Image (cartoon, rainbow, N blue to C red; front, side, top):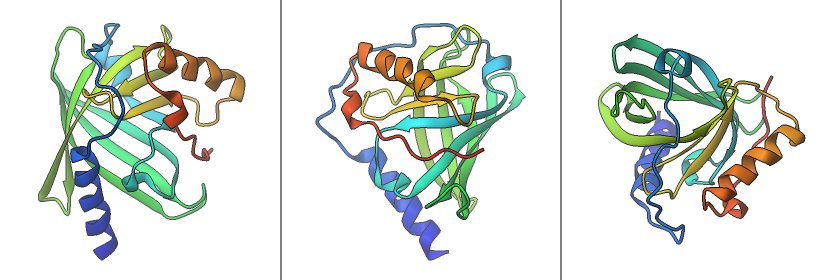
Length: 180
């Protein structure tokens, strides 16, 4: 219980922290088919390190449509190794830009009562919805996700190049172990 409180506190602090990462005026580049995108599990392949995710590997996000612009979000990872203890945090979300559907506001819930708001923007995605790159609106944090839980290095390298082309310092990214 105490560990969960510490993790949730770190999550809040990570969202409030500032860094040397450049602030970008980037906006989502493509329209998202919400029914296709916000359904099922996406696997986290790359991310900017933050205290909340220290030790997290084999992570991902599962989206469950709730009707209209509403989505249920469940983030998960394993502690220390792909076989480690499962850690989760989730909550209700809503699409804040209907039509484009690339901006999501999530209200994570800790202990069912503590609300931690976060905003995510999908900056790019594959035509076939096999991958996407997202960031927070300040462009401080960046994530690379795929539908494949174990993409090859040959699949990851072009995604990192795309993130770099968006103006993100990809030397800041970490690539945690993936699951199966």
